[in-house]
Length: 399
Image 1 (cartoon, rainbow, N blue to C red):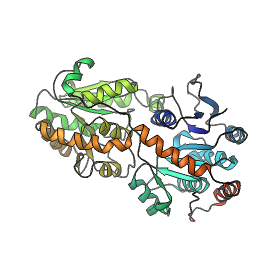
Image 2 (image 1 turned 180 degrees about the vertical axis):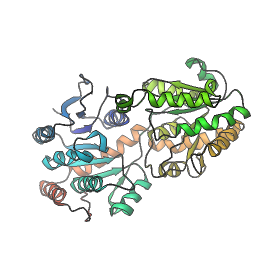
Image 3 (image 1 turned 30 degrees about the vertical axis):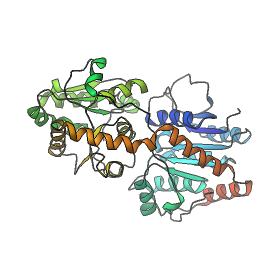
Image 4 (image 1 turned 90 degrees about the horizontal axis):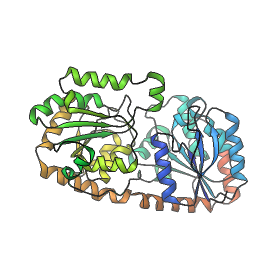
């Protein structure tokens, strides 16, 4: 293996947000290889850049692959952290992995719980302590780490969630490509599952349709694989039944498939309004919101942490809660005001130019260059701190 940057995460063809993020990040950084976190029901075949396979629930694999990376010419190991993709209780096997590494680790923190369990706190704090650099995707995530975990936020690298470079186009010119009517299209996308707040938008649709009988809502995305394995399509069917019960089944369209990035770009360009109705106010990142900004969409969102940060200064409409009347009022206002949609979309698009993948990749490469210059003594110190950390003591090793 000759790649200088190794990314450890899930990876396509697995269908999950972290896998897609890692594909895009590795492509933007270049000179990359992948050590894939492989779940028991994961794909059998991976692309050629996947050089190592860590079976998620086989603890010995973590040390085995770490030692293989130590013996390689890899310069930096980029760990994508989200609790559910790593093995062990609360994803604790990530600590076996980083403890066995002698290469510098850059950890990207995709999830920072507002109210962590003791196990979640221990894992996250230990990972930060063992990393040469820790990356979060928003200022709100850095503030949360300082407030709840005791991390000095000035020691964190804040790098935005990357987005594709999408064209701004007139939505009605794109809808026919998708077989959709020329009428106000409201869009949400992502792997389908509870906690996204789609119920509230469906509940709002009767008032939206009363204001504009041509308006419709598209929910784009396959059911999350883990949810599908546990419950089948019970959740999706429940959403459909809700739409029927409210008399708006003809105005709520489910596109039940995992779309390619190119097709996703087409759907985003075709939408008039994008909505993220997440009910969790502490959510620190949303790739779907970031993507919608990159397409210059007029966005309606609940006031979760990431949305407040991204949509401030007139880059979108924030509603106080996921209540259907709040969402409905904002959607009706935007449907009736083409000029407002254009202004919001333009501000979101301009802001997102710093978030396109070439820009994000350049920022990660600078971090990799910085930590790659660490000498062996600094790396040993980082690993030692990681293995000895106590749950209520916090420090950050950083170049």
